[in-house]
Structure formats: structure tokens, C-alpha cells
Length: 220
Image (cartoon, rainbow, N blue to C red; front, side, top):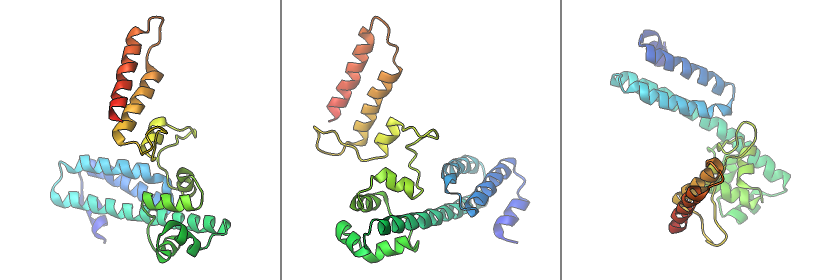
């Protein structure tokens, strides 16, 4: 009997049993190749953290080990799909690995290993260089590779907040990338304009808008 199975069958804690059920459901989805389980895996991690606060060290370690195993399974799935998409897109555009290396200054052998899923998916900065070299918008490249940045909702619309926070963003007059603080303040302005009451007397609302704009301008 495996260490995990022994743990499952001999632990009577109700909270742990709930977590085990979640773990086994997520694991089944990963074994089926379902990459859309990433949000549930993230929530599972949060649930494990909350549950392990009251557990002894051995039980907590067992749950964390299992979570790491699920993370590794997801990474392997992402790497396979990313590599297959990257290779298919590159070949459809008639770009050789050598040409891609010259455009990106990224090692040809590294990119070959990524395409063959011998390496995990690259970090976001590397993906951006590859996408730019293929003249594909970063978000489109990631979506094609099956990587969900959480920018689009289920109905296909785009959240302004997520769009700003998950992408490198600049303002034309700034000439440089916006900081996280500047993005937050810009989102505050948009949120207020979307949700503020807008009656006949707008003096207070306009003062609030001016205050938010002032905060944003001071951050530039």
C-alpha cells in the first residue's frame, strides 16, 4: 500500500477527508489531461493551508507533498501543450529554429527541448520574446498554447483590471511600462466611473474623480 493510500485510509479527521476528496477529484481531471483545472488546484492549495493549521506535522506534510505532486502533473501537461503549439505555429509560419534563435537570442537547443516537452513552459518574459518574434500578440499565443491568464471570463469578455495587471502596459506620453501601483490607481478611476451614482448634482462625484485622477498623476 502506498504511503498516500495508507494516510487516506487511516485518517478519520473530517476536514482532511474533505480535502482528500478534492485532491482525488482534481487528480482524476489531471490524469485525463484537463488543464482547465488550474483554478481549482489553486483553490485546493488555499484549502490545504487552512486545514493544516490545526493538523500535526506529519499529516500536514502528507497533504503538501500531494499538492506538489499535482502541481508537477499540471506543469507536465502545460509543457506538452505549449511545446506542441509553439512547434506547430512556428512551422506553419515557415520559421526554422535557427531563425527563431536569431530573432529572440534564445538558445536553439533550449527552444527545441521546449517544443519536445523536455522542458517545462518558459517564463512569461521568454514567451513574450518568442511570441513577438512570430508576430503574435502575447495573450493570443498563451491562449493558443492552452495557458489561461485569467484575463477573459467564461463569456469571452475581458476584465479591464485583469487586462492591465496581467500584461505589460504603457501610456503613450509616459514612454515606459506602467508600475503595479499606477495600474491599481488607473483601475480605481475606471471602477469609480463605472459604479458611482450619477444624479443631477455631481459635485461630490466630480471631487472624488478629481481626487482619484490626482492620485494617479502623482504616481507617474
